[in-house]
Image 1 (cartoon, rainbow over the protein chains, first blue to last red):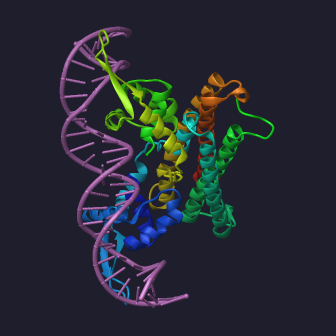
Image 2 (cartoon, protein in one colour):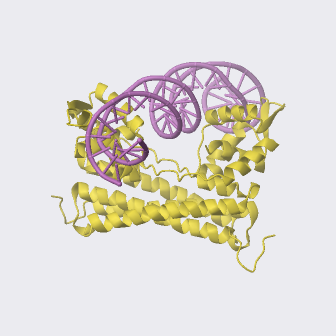
Image 3 (cartoon, rainbow over the protein chains, first blue to last red):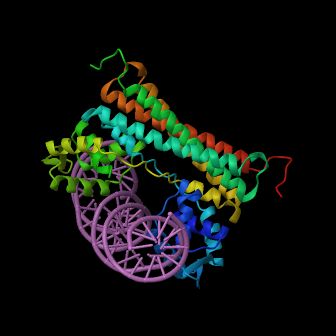
Length: 184
Length: 184
DNA sequence: CAGGACATGTAACAGGTTACATGATTAT
DNA sequence: ATAATCATGTAACCTGTTACATGTCCTG
């Protein structure tokens, strides 16, 4: 399981509440691992009873109390243990691929529209990634430590998204009826 | 949900038993959607009670009986309905990314070893894909219909795997200690 | 005063994994 | 004999999603 470990990493960098962690998962970490707040609350509770994290209730003026979680020594040990343990590659899962394979049994134009929709979504994500790259890592050669690691996973996102975009274009070119031609 | 629809597509191309479907998911379809046999049996049962598929028990000499599933009209309608319905892009989920982000809190060499392991796995998959490409689609320009769609999803696999490989190399180059240098 | 951000949670459900169980045939 | 392949299934469990519930404060 990686959600536990993603939370531990995030909490190591900065202690925080479940709510704050959910915010962080909308951004940086969420680019390659997503989670809803319910899931996060559940896992935090479990990690607390395992002794991986400690909680402290913090009063706030105006706002409701928050439970700030910090990584305990057992949690640090768990990160190290997990890092050393080999993990299988996550199997690819792409619903759009299933749809394309199914295209012959439905409306091809609808499938093309779907591909175009996904293309747009991925293009937007790629833009965000490239912006982050320019903004936070203008001189990648000089990075080291955690900043370097953050940069490297951002690179994964950039490569994945731009590859996906190219593929969408290949699909659209192959499936879309071109002017002057008519489909058999 | 895409497993139902992946099974419908597979059964449209050829009727088969749960066991046979599980075999197919190890190959072609499994390249972009995976499922265990238990999952498949469960979903087939549900689809049968929804009237999307029909079953026929087939006696075999020597081997145990098998239940051969075929797509019913309601199943065909369901494929068409699902194709026209927009779906969200599957969020990326890469455990290796989490590990790299965590690398500073454990043994960097262990993380590099993991990256190298994954690189090897993806390289092998890419080889298989390229072999399939040469073997089954030697003249991609002339494809149409289902064969074209199969080719396009294979292309997705090839692009994804080769992009991943390049990224692994980028990571290894950035993280691995080079001769003559020593890490701070 | 309505709506959004902050903050946490319960409950029910759907999807996916792992372990176990059975039993025949065929190949080594 | 032993293992692999064919073929189906139950049970328990973990992971992930959706809907609902509560309550305050701040902004427009």
